[in-house]
Length: 363
Image (cartoon, rainbow, N blue to C red; front, side):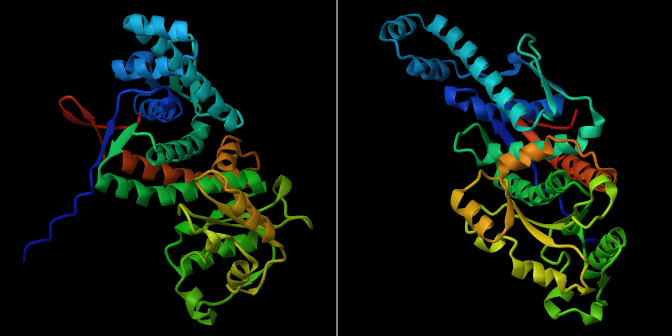
């Protein structure tokens, strides 16, 4: 009998568009970051321009009618001005991102050097750098500006990988927010795997007892994560104290209708049904999303005493180094998982050039 052909992973085809408008600077930072991840550096000379469009876009931003008339009369000079203005906008956008990440921006930028973006050589920040890459590229693909195009198979492959990458990014963010070790429950493959990980939590806390699998209600017996993606125990100085608690995080990449994604008391009670003796820790819910904050959603989280981690808060926490020793130790496994996921995804990526497509690899 002939063997079935091995399924070939879908190719992720990317096509980056030339810079054509001044308002694209924020999105183009993500493009520069992508190329820096691939090549280790990004230079001013790497920018591909649509000269006519960027010139027209720049002239539209000029409010002085006399100066605008001069620029229209001297298109060569206007193009030079447009490129310099875009470069300034780009550097300001990079500076904002660095500030947003509490100083933990994984790139080094120098406005005086042609190689204005280079990759940090701090290997201890690998998890943070890769978590940032996934969030940055996700935002680029979600942008309303046509800066990059991706084929359907590639978009589906990215969406599938990003779900897991975002959960792993949440592991670091929650370790910082909760100041303690984290357990990545979202990667559990079965309820047996889940029970094993929660056994580690009980051992760390020093109390709590899990039910046998046969004692679980049917909906929990068929669950691989108990409805919780990441669990963190607040343990200052590595010790569980009377003030310790457990943070139960749910991560979602769903764009809208997220009301049922908020970690409520009912959700946490369902999770507690995994235990015959619940750990002696208060549970606090956390909702993490890769989108900007929505006031209505933030209010719903406040009403349910659920911590809200939208994109800006995620970036801020990812930019902070984990100092608690147990948390740093637990994150090593997550770092390996994310490194593997990132390498596997990049191996599928090809970028359009004049001569076809060229494959990508991480610098």
